[in-house]
Image 1 (cartoon, rainbow, N blue to C red):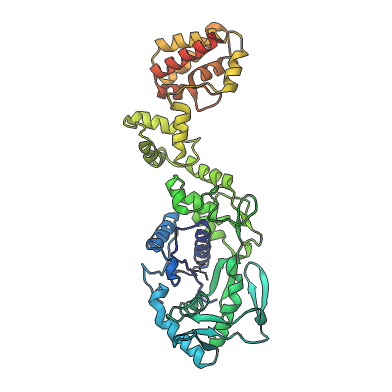
Image 2: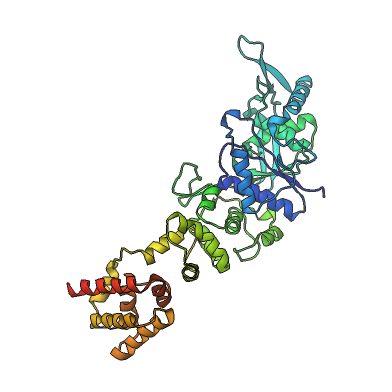
Length: 447
Ligand code: GLU
């Protein structure tokens, strides 16, 4: 088999979108699985849409995801240059060749001596190819109009430049989004007119939202740019893992897979034909799974900037370590640490309704809470001693189970569920805890 060479060919028109990241990742996986080359080529011929930082930020976010490549504008390589605007001479040369051979003609703008080159679509042809994802596809030439390959200003159009480049760069497989299926016959006719070998094509399915509609960049209910996930404290390994499952599935029944495992398992035959749903809960779940596996040190490093940005004091290192170890299990992504902090540590103490109802329905609840408060006031405020205070309250008043733990939890946190109570109370600190209990007592007495 010829050495596999695949490419990701972004237009630098904005931030790295989840769909583009998927295209890049699938090409990357394909190259690495078959020990081939992975090339990045910048398709910047739509000058009006180019954004100055587009290329840089896209590549930087790809690297962040753990993708690396063999040839690109920044790395160079034997088939450069790798930006289309630096390759105009090639398009001129090959455009000229098509003109001379009668495959293209001059198209003059009215009243001007400038002309564009238009490709002459052959008559009565059928363009057939076997798509790696969708199988046999065919298009009739009468459905395709003559189309411009080189504009008056010497800039090529996408369908022409892509063929010249893929040929010169010795691309063997073209894996890209479904929206390019109808471009493929145009590209095949260019290959044919030069007598060039046509690469294999594979068109990946649409990504749809939970309502089964095509993911639109304007849909703000879904975070769609990689940099946004990065800013929210998602882990690159988790995002990479999630993206690999958008339209591909491994032959084994396992979804949490490292990059090395996916490279090993990646086969084009397992690319899915049906649209892949962007399942936000699944992404959270995968990220949560990776996050729980971080070392405490790594987790602290992840959450620190979010705490600092919220001006939450983290100077006390022991406090921070205990806080992080208490919440690591619950935190689904970095930024969520602020929500968790607010939920459990905020000073605006309030009892949620169902917790209050629970207290109201219990006999002797005031007595339990008061006793607990008294023991807490006297004890050393360590998790161990706080635990002891709960236990002693139970023993001395002869209450146990839910009737003991719930009042203790609700009176100090306002909630019926949460992280380990003794550890959490130690972190909140004695003064605040006693104040909360006093508020609870007052509330119950005023009923
Ligand atoms: N520049 C095109 C895009 O961003 C690349 C299409 C292709 O891979 O052929 O959609």
